[in-house]
Image (cartoon, rainbow, N blue to C red):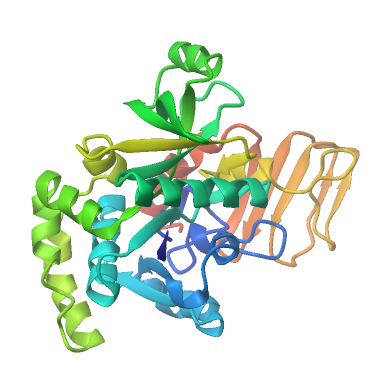
Length: 349
C-alpha cells in the first residue's frame, strides 16, 4: 500500500503569503503546520513513512525535503506543472516500478479536515472497496451548502457497508443546480481522494490518456536520479494539462465506488477558504501574538512576525510578507489572481 500526496498548486491566488519559491502547499494554516505537513499527518494515521511519497515541483525540492527527510518520507519531482493527470500517472508508474501492482491512495495537499478519525475511517473503507471489488474507491463529502466551486458525485445503491456505487459525476454546477444537489443526499462533493490498484489506474491511463501515459512509461528503469530528471524534462513540456478527474476518473470503464464522509472538509482554494478554517477569538478575529485589532470584529491578520494594527476595521483580511501587503474585504479573494497578475505584468511583483 502506497500513499501519494499531490503537492502542487499555484501561488498568485494566495499572494502575498505564497510565492514562486513557497507556493500553497507550504503555507501555514495558522496552527503551526503547513498544508503539506497536515496532509502527511493524515496519511501517517494509516501508513508508515516508507509507504508515502510526496509529488511536487523540482524547484521546491529543498523546502519539501526539509519536511520529508526527517520523517523518512520519499519525494518525487516533476519539472513543471501539468495538472493532476500527469503527476498522478507519473507517481503511479514510479510505484509500479518500485513496488509492483500494489494499492495506492491519492490525496491532494490542499485540504483541511476537521475530524481526523472520521476521515481515516473513510480512507480505509475506500481502500478496502478498491481491493475487494477491483475498482476505484473515492471519498465523497456530505454537502453543507450549495457550492459552484466543487465537482459532485451522484451516489447510487449501497453495495457494501458504507460503500455506494457511483452513478454519475457532475462538473462544477451553476448555483441553481448546486442548490438542488445540496438538498439531495445522493449528491456529494468530490474530495479528490481515491484508492485503487496501481495496475488498474495505469490501464485506464494507457486507454484514456495515451499522450500522457506513453511518454512517461519508460522513465523509471533509468539508473540515476539525474538521468530521470533529464529525461522527464524532455517529455514533460509536451504533455497535455488535464485533471485526473476529467482525464480518467469520470471516463473510466472500471467499477467506481464512493464512500460518503460526514467530516468537516474544506478545499483550501484561496485566502477566504484559508480564513474559514483558522481559529478565532470571541469577536471572530484571528490575530497573531504581536498584532492588534482595535474597535473591529471579523478581522484576520496573516503573515510573519511583523506587528500589524487595525483600528475601526471589520470584515477584512490583512495578509503580509516580504513580497507585499494585501488588505481585502472578506469574500473578495476571487479577484486576487487577476489583480496580482496585473501587478506582475507591471513589474511590481
